[in-house]
Amino acid sequence: MDTERIIIIGGGPVGIEAALYGRFLGYDVTVLEKGTVGEQVQSWGHVKMFSPFGMNSSRLGRSALLAQSPDLELPDEDELIDGERWLREYIIPLATSDLLSNSIRTESAVKSVGRTWLSKGHLPSDERDACEFRVLAETPEGEEVFNAEYVIDASGVLGQPRHLGAGGVPAIGESAADVFCGVPNSQKCEQMSNARILVVGNGHSAATTINHLQSLNQRSPETQISWVVRQNTKAPIKVIDDDPLSHRHEIATSANAAVRDGNVDLHPHCTVDKISGTGPYIVTLLQWDDDDDSSLEIEVDFIIKNTGYRPDMSILTETQVHLCYATDGPIKLAAQLLGNTSEDCTQIDAGGADTLLNPEPDLFVLGSKSFGRNSNFLFHTGLNQIRDAFTIIGQRDDLDLYETIEPT
Ligand SMILES: Cc1cc2nc3c(=O)[nH]c(=O)nc-3n(C[C@H](O)[C@H](O)[C@H](O)COP(=O)(O)OP(=O)(O)OC[C@H]3O[C@@H](n4cnc5c(N)ncnc54)[C@H](O)[C@@H]3O)c2cc1C
Image (cartoon, rainbow, N blue to C red):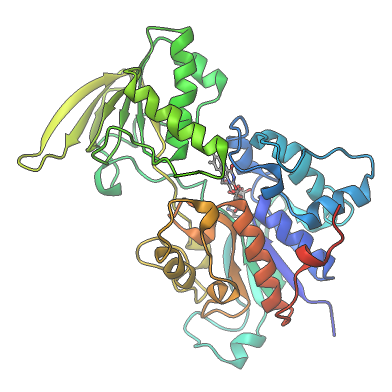
């Protein structure tokens, strides 16, 4: 039998780890990455990760790197590194290792996935199972078709930020305004010194933004920070009881302390209605009130949105992936995640191999994209997904390279 082919969409951390796993098992693997390896991690590379290196790497990955370069010094497993170091010392060395370097095509954006001889309307059948995938990508050489028996979509969510307007609908004027999306690095912070800054969102990215701006505030005391959150609370970031990740605890408590100490002007129970002007901006906020909704206007020079991301499922529209109406992620996993009540993403039970199955056979959505709009994805969960997906691909329930590979 010919070697089976796997196409992996996305050369982010999960795509690269999945490629490594597939190559170890002898599959013919092609990774199609629309930019450079780890492109999205690069965008937040200045941020210190809250999970330690041991959770951000696999035993397989560490062994592969040490087999290739025995003198290599990897970060300690309990070390907290930033995204830039994760890329430089782990993801990129894996991608350029002898095992993977010939399997990765950068600057190759996948446009559409289907089955060569069947359309979306052909119901699941043995025929569908047997028909190869056809993947269209825009590469530096022009449009190219790739065929494979399996497709793993690990194309992430970070390319599609959600809107900051009320109800997830764009605020009036949002698309025309120069809204910064993400956590500002030191250069961006310097640009904003002594200015009026609005931050929107209440997740850990928003908290990290607030903390970065706080240090700016200490150096440039005229800086004014406003923070808009939908929740009716004086402490916007949920602090997890006995948080096992100490840095995540620090991020949450220090952002809440910035509000408590009066360094940040919090607008709770608010959402953005309208942005006027070209900078400075007049931002109209809708304020929820039990008796009577009201609005207020604030004037700011910079707007930062940390309102989360959503997956781009358009590349899969010719396949039979059943999506959740609430998260836009694949339904089986979404249903499992909706049942999780823990605030702590390290405690999330992603449900095992069964939650990775779609009506479309041999197509797997893994990594942050598999969580859809749910922002609780951790790389560590991605490693479990890779292991589970290959038990299905290899038809071996007990297959677990992370367990069987010799520890480093
Ligand atoms: C500020 C911040 C801090 C974080 N801290 C942590 C942390 O401490 N611990 C942790 O576990 N996680 C953390 N995360 C989450 C982190 O992003 C994920 O764990 C990890 O990067 C997910 O990897 P991924 O491969 O699923 O997605 P991504 O890193 O987004 O990679 C997806 C890749 O697919 C490519 N791509 C997209 N569309 C296409 C296409 N059509 N064709 C080809 N390629 C495509 C992209 O260019 C990208 O390279 C953090 C995220 C942020 C934003």
